[in-house]
Length: 633
Image (cartoon, rainbow, N blue to C red; front, side):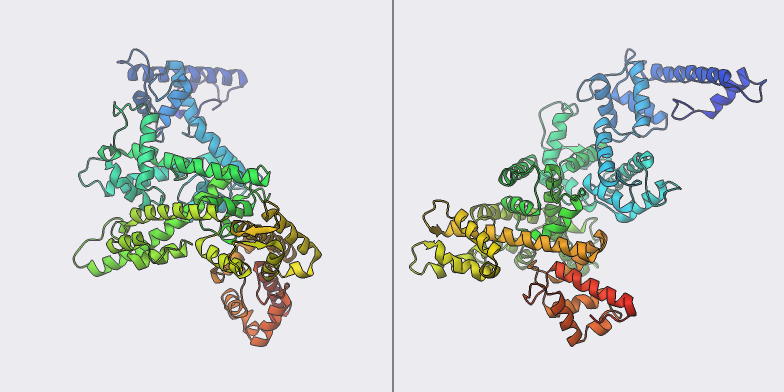
């Protein structure tokens, strides 16, 4: 019925029987009268409920009473939602105000209109829908997964697919329209509430219905929130305590270890961690500073991929351009080739979460071996991460895979490895390593320790007298070695000269080692931009879809483990065997045919193929296969 969210069929029947029983059908005037009488009855019933709930509170409805009335009306508000709505309707803070009858009616309507979300959540959800599906006929399962990831949820693709199947419109199967999107999100939020309830119940040994703050990180990492470290949980707890006016504690912020949390408290805490993308407040301030710094350098309101790499290395993450390329493109939905401040923050969150997951997997592997040896004696814990630890060799291997080089003489590493680092200890040790890495990267124009050592050796070759400076003319030979086309290309030669000029800040025709590092960073950025341009040209020329390019990039990166963008002939052979087993590789894997293919796609004649050239190889193979079933290049 118009204006009524859940019309009661029994009321309609009663009104029809009482006032219109003599009529088989009713016309517009009678219908309007029916609506009016239904509205009166609805208001009377709401008034009766309101008076009953406020009998002891002088006709005002508080948060607790509103929760009770909503549940009585078969509405299950998400944790924290009632307090947010009371604040919105009264203009107060911390849910301390109470509602009049008219405000109660408005609250009831808003719960239905917004599917149980508060105003801020609704705005965020609508922004996410527009971002990931507004220019299409709704969101498909992939779009829902991307939307959930943006909101900070640990995404389960099977759950996303099931939700889309349940909420898709009949005329657009596989897609969720704007009209049903909020229903889907409401159900997913409720799914998270139930997961938290179940996880809490599994740890509720004393049947108190609570969990201690100290034990909370273990629960959250099992639920997929790998960035919910004890430090993050502690800060989130104190932030929520302050925002709620410390109603429950009645004092200053108490130590989280002294606090038992209910299911609703845990949900609110997780919600806060998601809104912060798993970062501390100090982390977010540093991320914003990195973005502003690079924006000032680039003179643009957004950051391109190369600027994002520079900003991340300024933050201490030893990532390469090519490691960032796919997550960068996933976030760049506008295909502008740039990210804004929030998108850059999500990129940093992706890098940090990837690091944490690597450590988590290493810890789990260590825990599984312990459980396997102890199964006959002990019952495995709910969370295997609580049993695992990393020794020195495992610690060095895990950190090296993430790009952190731990010195062999580092006593801290040896001491940490000797006692074994549990999950959160390993995460905190990684944080300390990143801060040390940050200092090195900032002092050396984004180059790591190993790169600086190699460049210092190169610099000394040209500084034969050990003066600490090299003439720009002598450095020209160094650039030619690393940049061969500067000898043959007039444009490249002019660019090389401009780079040498810019690196020589005092214009004395000599460059010291810091200036040499600046010069090499500018050279590397120039080479990277050229490679990215060639790659984009290859994507356009081969006409692969974005999904196909993403799949091919995953395969290419599996073999290009050092992200050098140089795959040799033998590596190409292994790639093709995995991509086109038994069909395309049946002929192409012969040595002569593969060599011919390699030579044809190696456009820059450097005896290796980059990703763009790999796409050309794949297009040639697929075209040959489509033509006559023979993949011979």
